[in-house]
Length: 237
Ligand SMILES: *Cc1c(COP(=O)(O)O)cnc(C)c1O
Image (cartoon, rainbow, N blue to C red; front, side):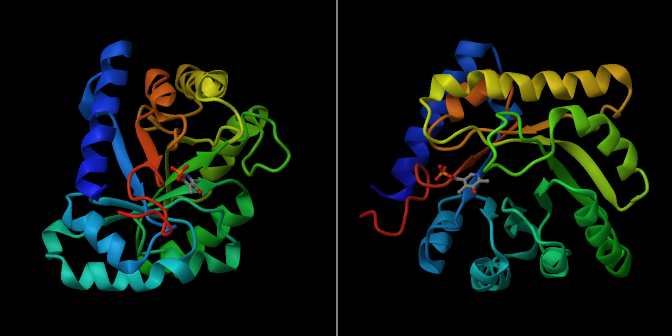
């Protein structure tokens, strides 16, 4: 299957999920997660029209980042999303290169991002990663810590918290992820209702290849699709 075919199939499924839940297609952004695939395949994704690209390690992303930014017109260059857990000392690698960070999960990282952002004179749009499912293996702050975390982030004016991100347990069926996604939406709504965040804190980054339709039904504004959209390297295209 070509990436073009994959995009069409995924589009149809996104549209169906929107219909089922009374949402508009343009409320949902798609991050094409290229972490599994080569530079060649990433170029093909770009050439097929995918503009939001997600990577989780700078070492793996670097060649793709440089090549695609070089080869694409400035006004139509990729928009990069950093989706992986980020070590504080690596913040300097990704700042100024990625437009969105989906994995802000501790104040020491906020501090590192802020330091670098001040140097570069940039504002960084960040999702706060929350461990809704409570799995020990998952990154993210505890839901109960969110309000305090948002308050503490005010110390770092270069960080713009734009919403929440979570990962559902992989091993579950898509439907079993629904309570996780629903909790994330409720958590966002609570932050808005209590004034812990302002209305720019509106985004929900949730849903991957196995569960994106449920995530859309529960209010996702960004879904992050790797294997289903751009494939894995070992797949035949
Ligand atoms: C790898 C990854 C994805 C994409 O995974 P697929 O299941 O292949 O769609 C999405 N989000 C994060 C945080 C990831 O690490």
